[in-house]
Length: 450
Ligand code: CMC
Image 1: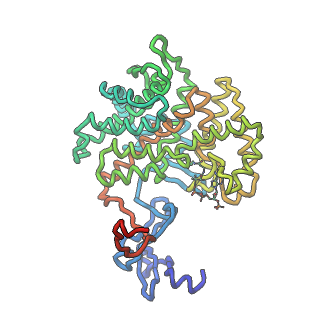
Image 2 (image 1 turned 180 degrees about the vertical axis):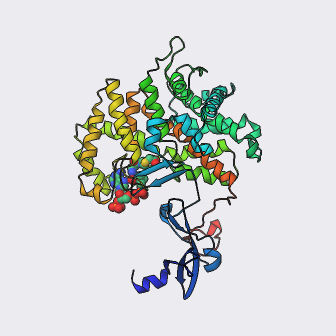
Image 3 (image 1 turned 45 degrees about the vertical axis):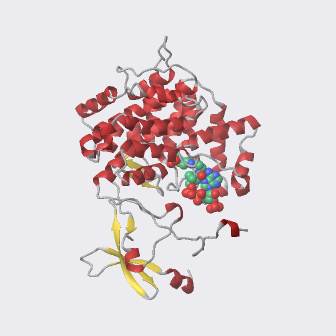
């Protein structure tokens, strides 16, 4: 930065405060001839953040940060990501270990309550899902109101919000009194809503949950059974879907989780906050990418391209194409979830004896992209969505349900974040802006307007 630019923007540098025994780090900001001290806070993994909460009151300035790429919006003890090293941990436990040894329900407990459950705690937690799996019967009428073509994400967010209408106690501000029940109801009923949404979109009769089935098996049952014959629950299918839920369970301050926290900061109820999270997740740059990846692979397959034409288009900013399932705001290395999913994808397809041409296209695309300087220089690697759709397709899940599956998986993460917002003395989230519109502008009566 040249001197002129530095003085107009102000300069910021970090140093250790003397005397050394205090060892509290402070950032020094020089702005318009004055020097300001800003505390530097450190996380448990030694990440550093400059605390600018007093910046505006001290200097009259705010910070501006496009897409919040450098903004820490909160302190959180739930999930740790090191994007440079490709590390993801839930409550300190590496995702690889959880994927190998745990289950979605156990991970939900871990995320929300901050520790692994004992076997008794896990049994009770699991039982609560069974006890709360049924929607209020009147909610069935709401499903009737949607057209058959409705996207299940639209139904999901609407119906999650509608659920709160059946539990008026949710609206009380004493969250502590009912948080546990709300959380359990939400995790359990989101899968019932999701399955009903799918049945509705296909004109199929609704299948009620069965208390003898565990979480993921029950979802598959509601999705695929018919009134006269139960769906055959293959253990490899149940395990594969459970793994997908588990891998999506939390991912720190992504777009949808930040949305949930933002809504929660206004003291909105858990169901309203989660419904907002579903809407944020729907976009193709976020959770909607899993559907977009499958559509992209299908387009490549249909056009007879081996992937090279598509890669060239993805490199061209004017083509309107992106390599969906590639790139991540935080990971500048392999997304650890993508590695796990790729391996699971190979295993599941082999076990189910599915030969999917889209899998070989995906592998060729990945191999080719990782050799291209465009992707290498920008550190663009496959993310969680690149292979998850191929597994879901092999399990018979329709493409429009892919993002719904992501939402079911992400629910414990949203709930854990909601809990943090409610438990911490959080101020309402209210960012500022740099106004770029017209300055004082008189009102012109309609007859005088050109
Ligand atoms: N294909 C082609 N170019 C890309 C891609 C891609 N998938 N992703 C990023 N780039 C380019 C981008 O155009 C930019 O180029 P330049 O520096 O020349 O302007 C550079 O790489 C940096 O990208 P960015 O857009 O600044 O990155 P971001 O952090 O704002 O966006 C992202 C991250 C995930 C939205 C983006 O990589 C993307 O759109 N990927 C495709 C959609 C996708 O797979 N989303 C799922 C994300 S993982 C699951 C989740 O958490 O939801």
